[in-house]
Image (cartoon, rainbow, N blue to C red):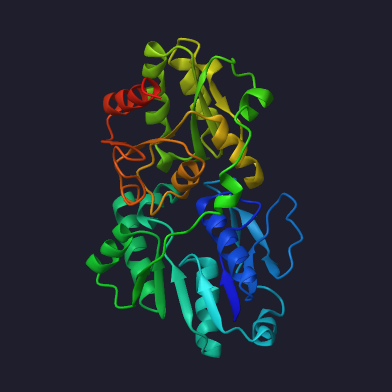
Length: 345
């Protein structure tokens, strides 16, 4: 098949959506399909990748790391017609998703939408009344689903949510897989070789983005409690995002020289993540807004036990007291769960 992917984010931007698209593309190509990606450009240099078409874009005013595509590309109409696509797969209901919908209708191409994100949980990026914004975004994304031929969701919880919203389009649960061969082996000393982490310290790891929806103030405050009971512990945040400076100030304000044991590595290349996961002793995850939590699967594929907040999307991935511990969004419970695993390795 000839598959056209329309997405509001792609490499070099880092997110679960980008990882999912990259993984699906790699596997589809391996199976003999042709994949063409339509995505924003970015201020930093973009990898020259065959079959990727970049749209002019501008920096998001509320999230400087994110680029917003301008949905106009000279010659796009002729390009889509020439590519003779068998299917269009969109990964957002917004800018690039609308472009995909337009060409699906124009050329009568089947349209599939992967529902990656709980969009109503991201309205804090929009400077309007939050309740109104949530209502508008929910209605908009539901209407978009009903304009598609099929919707893919990464977890049963998202499927149930769409049923509650009375989506008419057929829905299939298809979690994003991970390349096990890339994650099952890694250097267990990589973090301590490359960063100033004491040799005797245990490492707690978070991988993701430094954004409000990841609930990282909660995580850092819980870690400050862990440090009292387990002083030889380091929290590593392999992530970047608009809250980095704010979170660094928080670590300083909590005292105990906590800033010396909270390490911000920035975003790291995907090929490095196996080493990062294998260097850690425990994966910690406090997000409340996941549809799947892809990094949870990556961590478990690398053999890491998990402590996570029992939240939407996470419960499908973590089997409580089997491959991790789930807690309520309570710092005391989260702290106790971390200590339980540190003391029972």
